[in-house]
Every structure is written in C-alpha cells, then in structure tokens.
Image (tube, rainbow, N blue to C red; front, side, top):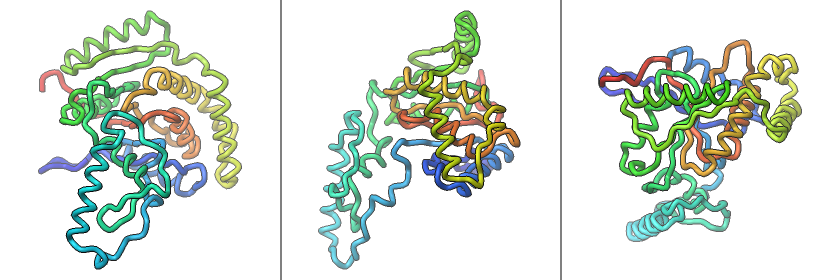
Length: 308
C-alpha cells in the first residue's frame, strides 16, 4: 500500500504462485518474500484467481503504430469500451473460457476476449447480490476486517453483502459464546454486516476426498522436485494444522463458493517448522476451486479502534 506524507507503505501484496509445483527455486524465493515481509513487520496479502494473474500468453504481437491512424485507434477504443460494458460480468455472470480465435483489438495490441473478461473481474459495479465473505480466523490487528470494510465504501462495492465467518475447535456451546463475543466486538468497531457465522468442529477430521487430493499434491511435488522433497517427518509435524486447513476448505466450499470475493486470514509460516513446498501446498488446498480469494495478514498492530 502506498504511504501518504509521513505514512510509509506497510502491506505487501502478491499474486498467488499458481505454478509453484513445477518451479522449486522460484517457490522458495516466493516463500522467503513472505517471511521477509513478516519479519519487517509488514502486512501480507496473497490474491488467488483460479485462472491466475498472468495474461501475457493471451496477448498477440504488437501491431506497428504506423499501420493505424488516429481515427482507427479511436474506433478500436470505442469497440473495446462497448465490449466491456456489455460483458456478462456486468450482470454478475462468470467469465467464459478464453478462446484463442476470439480476439479483440485494444489500441495496437491483439488481446484475447476471455482474458479481458477475467482481467476485469473486479471492474463492474456490483449489485446487492454480490457477496464479500471474510473468514476472520486469527487476531492480526484487524486488517482482515478493515480492508474489506474499506472496499465496501467504494462506489462499485457499496451495495454488496458483507458476511463474517469465524471457526472454533470446540463444540456448539463454544461457537455460541464466540458468536456473542464477536457480535459485541463488531458493534464496538461500528462494522455493519449482513450475517455473522461462527462454525464449530474445525478439529474434526476432513473427508477422505480432501485428504486424497492433498496427498496427490505432495506426490506431484516430490516427483517434480527431487532436490526439495517434502519429508514424512515434516508432514507429521504439521499434520494437525493441515487437517484444520482441509476442514476449512470444506467450510469455504459450503458457504462461500458463490461469493464474489473471499478474504481469509493468512496462516503464518513458522520458521524451521514448515518448508516452502508444504506451505504452498497448504494454501493451495485451502483456496482450491473457489472464487477470487485474498489471504490477508496484518502486522499485529491494531488498525481498528472503538473511538476513531
């Protein structure tokens, strides 16, 4: 985030590394960036779109500018604006699969229409049917709540629904007590929301399908990256944490699969206890097959107050 005046940037935003399974050294560098940001007391945000954030393959070669005059450029821009305004995303529909032959001229560059739709996924003005879900799992100073709250103050997101979720490891009684506590806290913070859910049973074993998919991820990594294997010892040391993550993914699929944006508290990678590969596998398993998801972690400094 850009600072103003004497305010300095204090949040690092990254795209989720979708190709982490096949690029071991780059995955380690990515992991170290997250560690360095946390060590420097920065907040960290990781945005994952299932289609990824790299659209370079969808751009055709640039056309020399001398082949077009100003009138043609203007006509292309008008066509592009018309295309965006009439796209299915304006009405809340999901983008279609990009087709190589379905292209559009954007000034002097050929661009795939499907890629253009995906790039503008957050661009349309959102209606009351739009949903932002916040999964507030740990106390990070409040950034996980503050950023979506500020987003809703923007014109494009003003009418959307704002739902807050939390999870407890205990039983239903623990969830009810947590619900009362959170409702009181949110009232003090003056944060309005449509729904507040506190789910229990996070420590219950995930279903077999989730476990099998995670094991397949680990096998794929070890096959592709023999120099940086995920050992059985490391897996066993983090087994309980991984099970909670897989259970969380079940909850996310159940409650947030139709949401427009999902914000989840980013788990901190403990030094010397989890490798880059296992940490990325953990995040991958949590965010797989979901709408745009933003992992967010504050720097433990309070950004929400009762009186401001």
